[in-house]
Length: 471
Ligand code: SAH
Ligand code: SF4
Ligand code: F3S
Image (cartoon, rainbow, N blue to C red; front, side, top):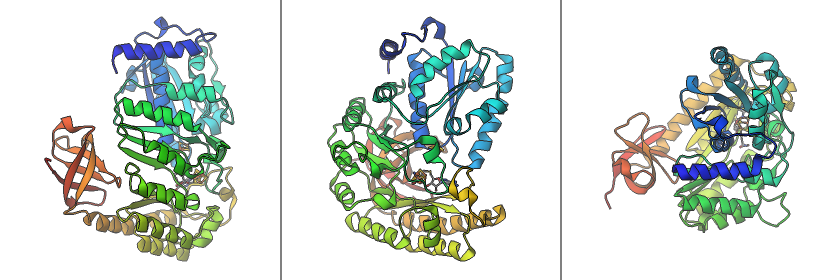
């Protein structure tokens, strides 16, 4: 995006917000910001929104944290390990503040929502704490933080006005993108017993259908090729809108948007994955054949205690239906080991289940006790050593399966959206198949953003390699 366009964003933003915030464009001249993002794609999208708001205020991004005038932590509470890492980093940057008292430090995201007082107490060098439901308050907080010695806290428990959402989602980064994420809903009503998300992200709230379509139409015009629709449980989309629109309808509508070549979504709950949705995906040329369906455990007793709302046999039937309608489908999952009460036999059931289903990939986690969630109070918490052993065992079983399935690609020609040069090998290009497999291959950097055909000649556990076909 050119200079003019970023100016336009400024104007747009200032028209909406300046009235009583005392924001001055001159005040922000040459200021730099760094956002440290932890957690899921929702947080990544929020960081883009925050970046857009900051760039609208005249801040420029800086990868070098020591050069930043504003450092913002966009935090995650999903596991204890994530929180500890973030506290460590917040502590570390205290020295930057000592060197530069004008430095503004903010904490946003799920930890802010959950532990506001604790953060203010543990890290008094933090200037402000901003919740997940009111990102539009950021400019006001920055202004106030300049004149305040105390840590400011601005958090609301539930998302409020739609106007704020429009404003937030309209904020733009200045970088050109091939792939973009679009929020379709916020929050979660599922209350899986291990999970903190419903407490930090509030209740489910769908964005209006028209607003989502308009945003994606705009992205299509700007050259974005792939959109990922974000929600903790996208299958619930529309339930709260009262317009008789569901997630399948939304996908069908997005399928017609010019410029967009691929549609992905994240995350779909196995319980609510309807036959209608399977049909829409089958009939769509743009919705990718990748199904991320977190199973969490392959043991029915544990699934019940997790409050997941499905059994392993219901899950297996769903996978069967998906594979029947989409023979090329890749299926990935999330699994937690060491949920309270998980016996060795229960864990064996999970191993057997993943061998039976044959997931393309599994994201595996050690159960982390989140205080305030029901599972935190269950008896029979599993010792860390046992959890670690189970995780290793699970990973090694899954890795074999991933490799086996990836080998099926050898000799096949696949469509790849070129994302740029590979991080691990700058001589090569990287991209993804529709089934979300990473492919590494030689080619001209100019191909970035284009769909190319690649013949696969090598398979590894996490990646495929191949040669690009010229025509
Ligand atoms: N809404 C998504 C999950 C979002 S959290 C869904 O239900 O599919 C991403 C993953 O983190 C979860 O699927 C789960 O596997 C893991 N997770 C959540 N809470 C956890 C906890 N307390 N300990 C360990 N892993 C957890
Ligand atoms: Fe957490 Fe369950 Fe909601 Fe996913 S569906 S965010 S695991 S409560
Ligand atoms: Fe973490 Fe919050 Fe996402 S807890 S996983 S950043 S919704």
